Image 1 (tube, helix red, strand yellow):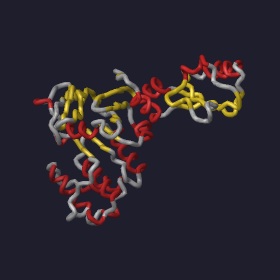
Image 2 (cartoon, helix red, strand yellow):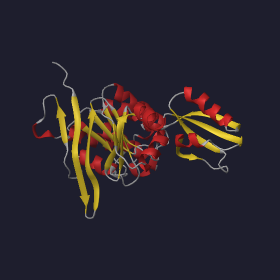
Image 3 (cartoon, helix red, strand yellow):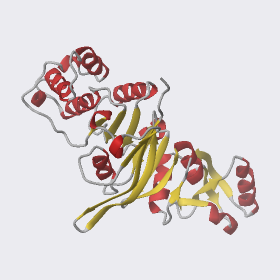
Image 4 (cartoon, one colour):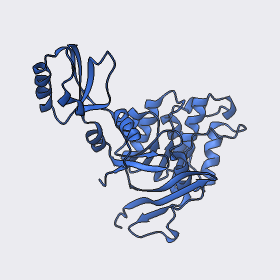
Length: 309
């Protein structure tokens, strides 16, 4: 039987809490097998959007595939959600908790997969420990394990590494599941994680998508490369001031600057213009911008920038 490609789509999702418009018509798609990042400051609407996707809150959403499912809803069993909040039953051990979760999805004889999950999340030594005896980081790993126990095709992780001691262990396992075809949706404050893991990223600001594109495209489009210069003497020529990056007029009494570069070829021209203006250099460095630079520019920018890649 031919494989049926799945597109997970949310279209014009809105959510209001009394006087707060938490989501203002969010639309985006996540392709099957994609590692998708959802970023934004606190209050941007990320957790609200995930709650709607998971069916925990009311909102308009749509699930599309080659042959649409009746009702257009993503079935609960297709999702594994790791919430921010630590919610657990204090009366069961780790293994019992995962067996109960398996039973919730109608899965019997799931112990081999439970053992594999616990091994990959470094929970094996705690398998028979009571949940209330675990540290916060261990409890969060059990939350991750609960979300994975039914092998969901779509795994949603809402700030999963907050408080987790062994982040590399978690990401090694999640990346493996992604390579095996699982779709991952991640929200995180650790932007270096999003940069290294996510194929595409959507950035939310005050309930709206303000940037959406491939991670590599966002890095190049918004930040690209930057030239850091510190002058021993002289001031930046006026014709170069338009190149200053956001926050690029650094301190140091105007002696240091961060300039945007379109390519490495610009470096020689910029340095030549500075020398012609009588500047001498104390420090020169070419920097590749990271996702944090992009995030700051997008969140401080007035416009909505949407890539269709």
